[in-house]
Length: 115
Image (cartoon, rainbow, N blue to C red; front, side, top):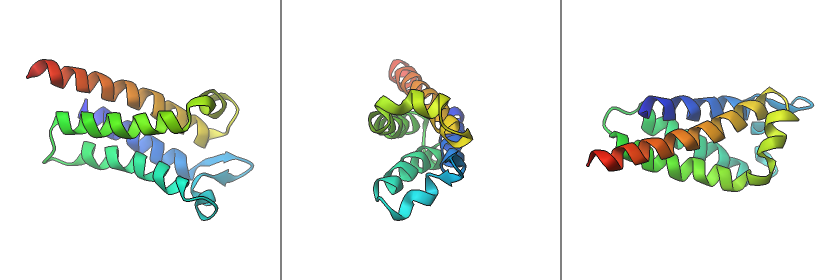
């Protein structure tokens, strides 16, 4: 499950640099609003923890749940718009957000039952 959290975090990071529409990516909008940096960091953190060898599954589950939960809160009303009305970057962000949160919650529940 830790590798899936890594994969969905990486998919979200790739989606941040791909165009959302009209050739503009989320990374291009970083100069206009500081919330863009929070979104990029929220995708980078589970990617880092999922890739590290020193952290366990529980740490990856907690970080993934917190990061993807923040992203779900941030994009709550616009996930459908990102998935179906945006370009490839929005599609990658929406898929990474929904499946990353689901995978993190399942990993968190799995780690809690193993104790």
